[in-house]
Image 1 (spheres, each protein chain N blue to C red):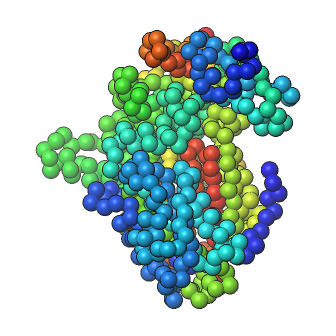
Image 2 (image 1 turned 90 degrees about the vertical axis):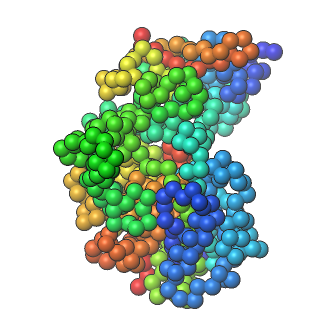
Image 3 (image 1 turned 90 degrees about the horizontal axis):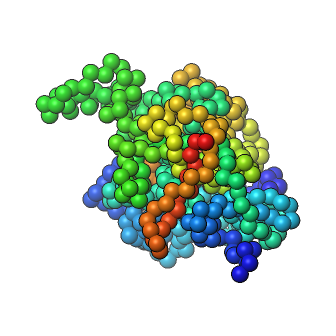
Length: 140
Length: 423
């Protein structure tokens, strides 16, 4: 199957991520890049997408340090005594995406600056068939 | 976007509105709370209330499925208040569920199909432990792209606050002012879950510590308390516990009728002169993280339909699920320019005697936030204020024009209604 026969789904995006690749969909008609990936272009309405590689470079657009997290993060040991950072990263190619943030201090979130340069740093959880990649960025 | 200069084909009025007590009720189910809300609503109708006249039922509910293990809730609610076999529909748009249920009721009457519609909202949240409530609410986010990287609902609004602080120079203390104001209002609302001012809450905590023989906190003032990591812990920086609306059980109900029969029920119906709704992308996909686009569009649609502007509005109930959300709402609705909403509580502009009182009910913050019931809860407060029935928290000047702003999730849904009292 050629790459552009792979459907533009979150599942496919995640499979790429599990293989250390950050991909987006790009409309062949108007050349707009989409992440989260889309099958239909909201701008021109066409369904003619292609997968493209993203550089993995971006900057911080918004963030928070989470002290009360969801169950799956609590199970990884995070919580009131061990907060984690998550936020929104504006990618070099334009789209913004939610991601974990690494290399910054979750205990001192007020020192973090919006606009901080970031690069892709995928977190791998589990092994083999259970492997799941969590989208993350770290400071350059 | 479609042309926003739209009118309803037939006018709709609000002639009754009521709510259950909001709080934590382990001995009740959401249907019991809906019965309470329905009874409160029926008492609020001045004359000729007859449940046989109700033709259609629209119920807002986010997740009775996960919270109570009960799906298909609309006919159950209709049954609980004696309305089988009327058509009953459940509306789910996260925390905007009942604001949207109200809009669906309005559209049903405007279509000409029905003359009298019961709209309401229910949510029973406290049956689950807090961690599962967090997970259930997270389902209103994007479970493919947002939730897997650890976002929570406080987290989303905290991220908006980080962007807002960065752009406009606001600080956590500005948000605390919103909490102080809303608890001051909520203390005058007998239906509120946390109907207590923050200073009174501090006194309660001190007395409780004394009674239990525990060390008595020595907070100098409310600022000392609000900065105390134990008393007001960080939930998701910069939002602390007192920046967040609570987990709440509650139900709300309102009676909508066609304008031409409204005077049968009261001499002073509230005409719904504006109704607007819009949707938006998940947070990360929006151009501006310091504003909610759907709120601006919903407000624009409602203002245009009503033929009024933000300056005409005399009070508003806005969706303060988190303190930052009230600030952003007050700008999106046009009460303040972008970047100038954050210190209006402190300046007194949004207090009960201010130029534009916001959340006189105590808001979701103090009144409580049973998510699927909150939108119509806002309409209950507007009803009370515009009918002079808000008791100790009644604002001065005999207001006749009010607005309700109800947001779903991070703003993927927003619905705005404008009410005007008929003389």
